[in-house]
Length: 472
Image (tube, rainbow, N blue to C red; front, side, top):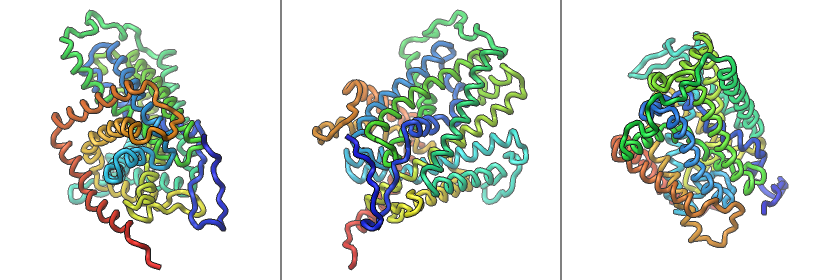
C-alpha cells in the first residue's frame, strides 16, 4: 500500500525533497500532452503512401495504439514497483545495473530531451509565424559558419527560457502551464473534428475503397511490409507515454496513479488520433492525403476555406508548446535520479529548498536545449537516437521478465495485464523494428550508438568519484 507523503521537519534534515503534487488528472494530461505534439498534423502522408486503402489507413492507427498499450502495461507494473523520480531509468537500473541505466539517461540528456525541447519550441514559433509574419522563419537574424538564426529561432529560445523558469519556481506552476496548454489543444482539435463533420465540405465516399480490396492486390508478405513501413510513423506519433514514469516521484498515490495514467492516457490518445485521421479522410480522398506533407492545413482548406489553415497553424503552435512543456517538466527528473545515484553531475541531484524542484537540472536542460536550438542540428541528432529510444523501451519490457525472476517477492500493486504474452509480443515487435532500423539505416544507427557510447568515460569518472570517501 502507498503511504501518505511524509512532511519533513526542516530541523530534522538539511535535504529538501520533492513534493507529491500531481493528481491522476494531472498525470493523464501530462502523458497525453507529451505524446501529442506535431506528428498527428504531419504523418498522414507517410501512412497513406504505403497503405492507399481507407480502412487500412485507419486500422494502422488502432494497431499502433494497441501495441503501445502492450508496452504500457509492462511499464505500469514496473511503475507500481518503483514509484520514484527517473522512471524508466530506475527500471533499467534495477534490471541491468548502473551502466545500462546511465547510458539511457545520457542519451536522454545529450540528445533526446534537449533535442525534443528545441525542435518543439522552434516548431511552435514557426507555426505561430504563419499567423504572425513578424516572427516568420523567413526573417533571418544571423547567418554564420553555416548556422542560420531566424526570428522563429529567437522565439523558440524565449519559449525554452519561459518553460524552464516556470518549472523551476514550482511543480504546481509547471503543471498548471502544461494543463492549460493541453486543454487549449484539446479544445482546438475537438473543434476541428466536430465542425469538420458538422459543416465541413467533406464526403463519406472517401471512406470507400473504390474497387481496391483490403489486400490492395498485394501478396501477404508485401502487405505486412507495407504495414510495417506505415507503423514507423504511427509508433513515432504514439511516442512519449514514458514521460509520466519520469515524474513518478511527484505523483500522488503513485503505485495506483502512474499505471492508471499510462493506460488511460494511451487510450485517450488513440481516440484522438483516430478521430483526427477520420476527419482528414472525410476531407480528402486517400490518394490526395498521400500527396500532402502538412495534411492538417490541406484538410482544413478542403473542409472550410484556405483561411482556416491559419487557424490550424495556431493550433499546431499550441500543441508543440504543450508537448515542450511536458518534456521540460519531466525530462529533468531523470538527470535528478542520475545525480542522486552518483553517475552524473552532483548538482543535478540538488532539490531547491524553497521551490522543491530540481532547479539546477532544469536549468542545465534548458541551457543545453538552447544550444541545440542555436546549432540547428537538433533534428539530425534526434534521428540518430530514435532507434536507441525504441531499443530502450524493448530492454525495459524485457526487464519486466528479468525482475520477475530476480525479485519475485517485491510487491506489484499492478501486475502486468496479459503477462507474459502481451509484453512478449511487444518485445518481438520492438526487436524486429530495431534490427530493421540497423539494417536499413546503418548510418543513423552507427552515429546513434556512438553518441550513447561517448558517455562511457563520463560514467567511469562519475562512478569513481562517487566511491571516494568524503573528507571530514
